[in-house]
Image (cartoon, rainbow, N blue to C red):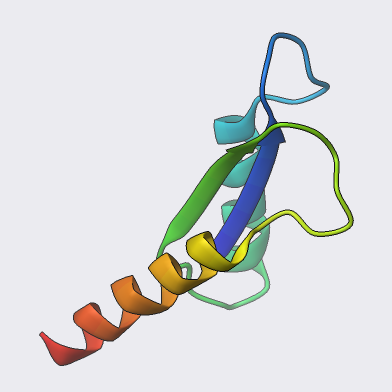
Length: 68
């Protein structure tokens, strides 16, 4: 699972989708499998990038996939 956070608004050093794709390619090159990607827009830089709600959403999504 690849997870990315981007600060809302214009600008930024890298395009979020391009960064995730590059990370996915590096992951596959290292012999791992990317099963899903998750991204989130954040208001400002913080010591953590994903809040409790997003983490719970990710766990729920993976639990549902495993039950299917």
